[in-house]
Length: 419
Ligand code: NAD
Ligand code: MG
Image 1 (cartoon, helix red, strand yellow):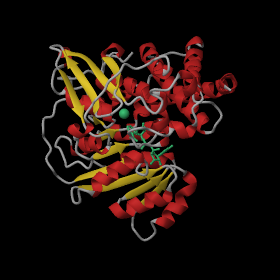
Image 2 (spheres, helix red, strand yellow):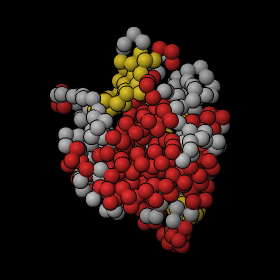
Image 3 (cartoon, protein in one colour):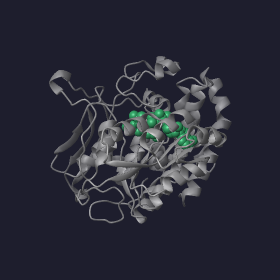
C-alpha cells in the first residue's frame, strides 16, 4: 500500500502542486520531450507548434525512429536529439549534419536529455524504460508532465518522495489523473472521501469472457475513443491500463486503494471525479483528446489555448456509466491486490504485464493469457518470499528485471494453458 509519507495540502513533501499559487507568468519556457515520436509526443509537439515564441526546445528523444526524430529536431530547432538505440548514432548524426544540433545515442543519452536544463519535461517514453530518464529530470528539480505511468507504478512511492525532495513539480498528464489534479483543488485532504477514475471499457466492454479470451491483436488495437500507442491500446482492451492508473493515482496523490474507484464510462467525456465529505462531486470533462491534459500541464500554473475540439454536450446527448466487471477483466482486480500487497508488488504487476503484452503482440499468447501471466507472476513472486520495501531506483529496476525473468519463465506454461 502507498505509504502516507508523501501527503498533500500544506505538506511541502508533496511533488504534485495541488494548490495553484499562480506565481509564474508567461515567460518563454524551455522544454524537453522524452518520447517525442510517440502518440503523446506527437500531441505535445502539436501544442508547441501552435504557440510559436512561447517555448524553446532543449532536447527531443526517440527509441529508434531517427527519421521522425531528426525531422522534429530540425523543425523545432532543438539543442539536443537522442535516440535510445545505440546502433543508430551515425544515422542520427548524418540526418542532422550541418544543423548544429548535438546528438547522442543509447540509454545514457536519453538520461542526458532529461538532465539538460529544460524548465519543463514531458515524460512520454513507453514502459518502465522511462523510469531512469524521469528520475534524472526529477533529481534536478524540473517540472515534469508525467504521462509515463509505468515508471511511477514501477518505482512506487519512492519516485514521488525523490521528486519532492529535489523540489521537482510533478504534473499529472494522464487524462484521468489530470482530471483529479484539477478537481482536487476544490477541497482539502481531510475532506476527501474518494476519487473516481473513468474507463471507456475498451473494445471488449460488452464482449463475453470466452470471446475476450481469444481476441486478436487487430481487435485489441481498435480502441473506441482514444488514439494512442500500441502498448497502452492493448492495456486499455485488457483494462490493465485502468489497473496501472489505479496504482498511479495511489502514488501521485498518496491515496489508499479504498479511496480509489473505477467507473466505466463509454463516452470518455468525464475523465475523473473527486467526492468530498459534503458529497459534492467535482469532475473534469473534455473531448477524449490528450492535447487537453497536456495543454493543462504545459500551461501550468496558467492556462493556454487548447487544440482539442471543444466539448458539445448537446451533440453528445447522453453520458452513461456502469460498474467495472472484475471477472471479465481480472487485470483490474489484480492491480488492487498488488497495491494492497505493496513492497514491490506493483513493480511486478507492471513488469509481468509488459512481458505479457509483448508476448501477445508476438502472437505467443492469447489475449486472455495477459492477465493470467500477471497473476501467475504475482503469485510466484509472493510465494517465493520476494516482497520487500523498495529502497531506491536501483532496487526498483532490479525487481523489474527479476519479475520480467520470472514472467518469461512462466510464459510457456501460460501459453500452453491458453491454447
Ligand atoms: P508510443 O509507443 O506511441 O510512444 C513511445 C515513445 O517512447 C516513442 O517516442 C518511442 O520512440 C519512445 N520509446 C519507446 N521505448 C523506448 C526506450 N526503451 N527508450 C527510449 N525511448 C523509448 O506510446 P504513447 O502512447 O505515446 O505512450 C507513452 C506513455 O504515455 C506510456 O507510458 C503511456 O502509458 C502513457 N500515456 C499515453 C496516453 C496516450 O493517449 N497515448 C495516455 C495516457 C498515458
Ligand atoms: Mg489514462
